[in-house]
Amino acid sequence: MAQPEREAAIVKRVFRRYDKLGDGTVDRDMLWKVMQTLPSKISLQTFLHLLQQTGYDGGRVNYVRFLDRLFSENAGEDAASDSEETTSALDGWRRLLLAMAKFHAPDEAVDRRMHSAKPAYGDEPDCIVCYNARPSVLLLPCRHMQVCKCCAPLLSSCPTCRANIKSFARPCWDPES
Image (cartoon, rainbow, N blue to C red; front, side, top):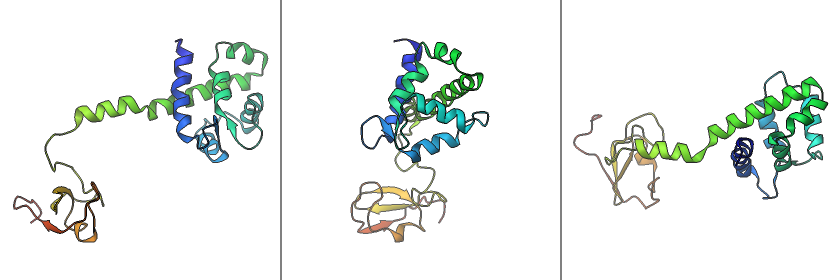
């Protein structure tokens, strides 16, 4: 698989997450989110021109066709016939979409988290409810210890396994006591 095809596949995977209908299109809200992150040198007129070339009908955007055109081998040839502004817009889109794909790449992120995960039980740095204090309360009967002493009384079920909480325990080694 050539480099542009590989890059297009990565970006398509990112857009597929937002494709609620499964038809290869995204709605205007998603399009607007992407537009807000564009470099300022890409004008709205250029952006709309590119969308019209790829089949934008005013409602949903066919991201499959858009990305195929953007990452195709002959995109440079097509852009040569367009204005200089369109060429810079294509380059801007490529950079933007590749940055989005790298940010959202699930495989690498999961691998990094798996290698850095601590095997010790109850070693979470923050309460999973408020993120402001260290976990210090053991939830019973499930024995999960991921909440602080302020959040524990507010819970009726464990945030991790959803088991009903029957009682609480505070370990004697608790640094907050």
